[in-house]
Every structure is written in structure tokens, then in C-alpha cells.
Image (spheres, rainbow, N blue to C red):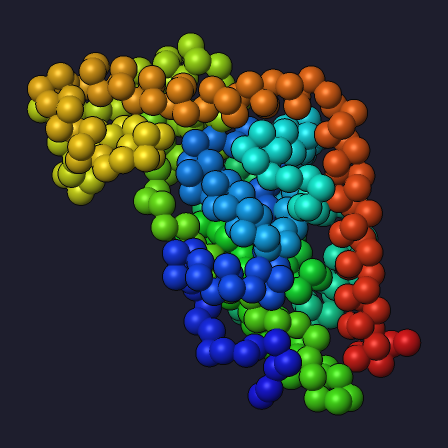
Amino acid sequence: MTTATATTATSDVTDLTDLDADIRRDPAAHRVLTGDRPTGPLHLGHYFGSLRNRVHLQRLGVEMFLVIPDYQVITDRDIADHLAEHTENLVVDYLATGIDADRATIFTHSSVPALNQLLLPFLSLVSVAELHRNPTVKDEIAHSSQATVNGLMLTYPVHQAADILFCKADLVPVGKDQLPHLEVARTVARRFNERYPHPDGTTVFPRPRALLSSAPLLLGTDGGKMSKSRNNSVPLAADEDTTARLIKGAKTDTDRRISYDPAARPEVSNLLLLTALCQDRAPEEVAEEIGDGGAAALKRTATEAVNEHLRPIRARRAELAADRGHIRQVLRAGAERANATADATLTEVRAVMGSL
Ligand code: TRP
């Protein structure tokens, strides 16, 4: 099979550091799409794992689309609580951490109807068995508070394929948990291209690649995965006292000698890593400095490092948060641009499918 867009042998997962030179050579050859569910404030894990990479990619000159997938919120809960508030706060977090709203297209699922039109042909390309096999969906079903599994839970990865494919993104910065969804998007793109080529043999969709962050994963204050919904994260928007309290409450161990050993001492190592990320140095060096100071000294050091690193971001955040009119305007402009792109893709899809 030939695709007009696949120029090199692409693996499905790439590390940003591997791609950096390639992107610098020709940033206009790439398009990034990623997004965050509007279910709560972004935290340090998002910041070091993904927000910083996005800003880096944008500064390299890559066009960026950021989807706020409001329809994904109702996959594992009945009601999307505080949807408008969470959505606006995400935009505030994006802009405060350095995303340029004039160049990035920030939009919600629900403001782009063509995404739902793309969903239908895409669903026809995926089997029910494949929907049931998705490991991330299985995990979410296991952790869901709902008594029954709704249809959207099973089909949202195909909707997510529409998020990615509507703008023909080739790079999708995500965490490891999203890799099964990226695989769905790649499968949909491949099958669509095979089934519905243009008359001249070229194809509609590129094969998107996941872009994994090279930053090691931050754990939550309880030693588990840092997550908005597990109450174990340090939000970007937290004030300095709250940050101190959250880090003070973090799980550690009783060995006073501080050492960086993620396998044997995950919680202590996590605070060292957090400090190191904030100060742009090695966690071993931070451990060396604290020496026999114990968990209390470690937590003081980590708290200072986080508060210092986030101070300018938080100051910008506060300014942005005070101007809701501006935030809504960013979403309006983003929706307009996303709709124009999505409508153009839908027109192309309907043409190759013979609908026009
Ligand atoms: N599923 C992602 C999450 O739970 C959010 C998301 C929706 C997304 N659409 C996307 C991520 C497209 C990357 C690309 O966080």
C-alpha cells in the first residue's frame, strides 16, 4: 500500500530527542495534536511529562492543535462536573506555561461537529472485538465508578482517532497509557486509506506517531501514578503554602541517608527527581547534597525547588485567570480554526467515499 504522506519508514512511537533534529530542519512538515480531559487542574506530572514538550515543539515552529475533549469526560462518569470551569482552567494552564494562543489552535470536542461526522465511517473500520481488547479502555472500565459500561467508553478511542486525523497530525505527544489509542488512530488511517483512496491513488490520512516524553514519570504523593482523579498530585495552580503542605504529606521511608534509587526507594527518589527537574540537574546530585538530612530536609528542598520554578508561571497564571473574557475568546478563535480544518477534511472524506 502506498500513502502520499508516509515518506520514511516510521515506527509508531518516537522519543522527542530522536526527532528534534528532524523537526528543526523542517518544522512546517509536521503538525502536532494532543489534549487533556477537562476533569481537573493540570499538575506537575503533566507539566514535566508533556506541557514543556509542547511549548518546545511550538517554539521550534511546529503547528499545534490542542483538543479539550469534553465528550471524553462522560465515558466513566454520568455527569461532566464543572465542565466550563475545567475547560477554561486548562486554557489558563496552557497559556501560563508558554503556549502561544495566536499560533496554537485550542478547541473543545463539542465545538467541532465535523468530528462526530468523521466518527461514523471510522467506526465502520474497527471491529467490536478490537474495541473490547483496548487495554486502556479495560483499565478505565476497571477503575470506573459506574455500574455499567456505556457505549461511549468502548468507542471513544475511535472518536479520539477523529481528533487526531481531522487535522492530519503526524505527531501526537502522549503518555504511555495513550499508546493503544494511537494504535487505533493508525489502524483507522491505514484502513481508511486502503478502502477509500483518491482517484489518483494518493490517500487522505497520514499515519500519526506517538511522541513519548523522555522525562521519567513523576509519582503522586502517595507513591502511585500521579493523577488528577487520585488526589495525589501537586496542581500547577496551587499556591506556595498548599504546595508545601502537599509535599510535606508525601510518602517517604525511614532511612535518613537520602539516596537516588528509584527501584528500592521509589518515593524518596520521586522527590529527588522532582527537585532535579525543577533545578535542571541530576537527582543523584540533589541526594548527595541532602546526605543524612532525612525526609524532612528532602521535602523542604523539593518544596523550595517547586515553588521557585513555578513562581513566574503561577504569576502569569493568576493574571490570565483574572481575564475570563480573553480565555473565552481564545476558545472561540480556536473553535473557528478547528472547524475550518475539520470541514475541509470532512469534505475530502465524503468525496472519496462517494457521498458528494
Ligand atoms: N485520551 C486523552 C486523555 O485521557 C485525551 C485526548 C483526547 C487526547 N483526544 C486526544 C490525547 C488526542 C491525544 C490526542 O488524557
